[in-house]
Amino acid sequence: MASNKMWYTVALGFLLPFSYAHTDFFTSIGHMTDLINTEKDLVISLKDYIKAEESKLEQIKKWAEKLDKLTDTATKDPEGFLGHPVNAFKLMKRLNTEWGELESLVLKDMSDGFISNMTIQRQFFPNDEDQTGAAKALLRLQDTYNLDTDTLSRGNLPGVKHKSFLTAEDCFELGKIAYTEADYYHTELWMEQALKQLDEGEVSSADKVYILDYLSYAVYQQGDLSKAMMLTKRLLELDPEHQRANGNMKYFEYIMAKEKEANKSSTDAEDQTEKETEVKKKDYLPERRKYEMLCRGEGLKMTPRRQKRLFCRYYDGNRNPRYILGPVKQEDEWDKPRIVRFLDIISDEEIETVKELAKPRLSRATVHDPETGKLTTAHYRVSKSAWLSGYESPVVSRINTRIQDLTGLDVSTAEELQVANYGVGGQYEPHFDFGRKDEPDAFKELGTGNRIATWLFYMSDVSAGGATVFPEVGASVWPKKGTAVFWYNLFPSGEGDYSTRHAACPVLVGNKWVSNKWLHERGQEFRRPCTLSELE
View 1 (cartoon, helix red, strand yellow):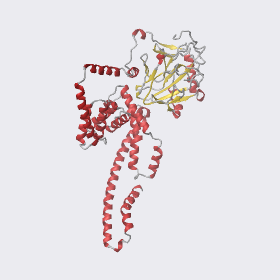
View 2: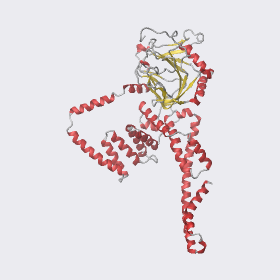
View 3: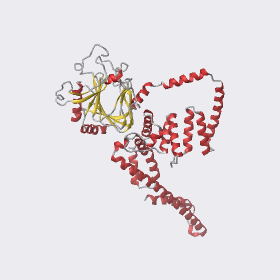
View 4: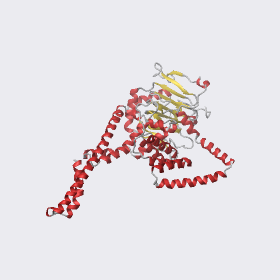
């Protein structure tokens, strides 16, 4: 039906204007000969239309075949498939950009059923923000784990189940997103990767002229004038009439001439000042460097003397009746602050129940705004979370009781169980769980005092990345399904322990599920009595 509609549209486009001007064709052969020419034009147009439609159908068939194989693989193991950050980015890109292009391609030629269904489904697709967010996640993973663009583009990541790669067009898209953020460092990296893949013979719709245009400007913005000129020359070899490139070339030559004059009058003192500036740049954000090193497993190593103080044991919750005959396995992860891990502390069945309860409620994770004391979303926490109460499920209630038995702390004043799932490159940058003195109203609405301790369940294994790290002390705690870690955020005196500043590293490969319980001060007066010494 759609094809017939198109044919009539083409035909009417040629006949209507002429017909309205001349209605009595049969009265003149001369006029009828004009119709012969019109029909000839129609046949030529029809043939062109058929060729165009056949070409479109071939494109659609190839796209459908590619997506059929891809979705068949993805649906067999969705979490494992999306655990590869490249797959997650490309899913965002396909649904936000490529499906829209396909819709435009087939809009006039497919059945009304497909179009109406597509229109309905499009409102539930990822948007530009999702695609940009996934792209930024790839850049974040690249920086945190010291990945070069070729490694990331080829999908050569540790522990991947479904290897995937970025096309030159994908690399170009990443470069453009970095460019819109004025991130010229990543713009250069990804435009160069796109260019490299095209130079190697990859067939792509990406245009070298456009790539070189972005690349030369990004390089110039970073101060490498010689390279910017070289890239602009290459662009002009491909498109000698490129207006912006010709203008840039003249400007670069002018700047180069000025720099040569300035260099003649430069002194050793100025060179020394530049070196000092570079050193200062290298020392910028030391916590960030520590955090990223710990995420890569390159952090500080504990001395053998301190390691000897770490033990593993069977723990009965200080002779809790429930655990005297069946103690749990506990091991020390770190000494100061003391971080302990409980092994085999939550079953696979309990994990699945918690996940199923949480999935329908997952929403963008929030943080406490220190100025307002209220919850808000933040770019430095990339995950979705949900809150589960003990009264709504016996499993959650049982988990709460378990935490109380093993910590000795009252959970009646604790926050609900928070379940979190980290997305592509999901992370939570360095933060404190407790409220500091400069934010006295952080938990005022709860009326239960400060967060005295944190209990964190790991509900999945993570193939690569995703560690919980403590930059102040150099501790790295790696996810292990079925285990939980516990630490105190406050000293017995009620003062905050600033060494507990911690972060959730970006998930490089895999899918990270955790759940945590924040226990508060109220109700602990006799369970963990205060001390006179501030830091005891």
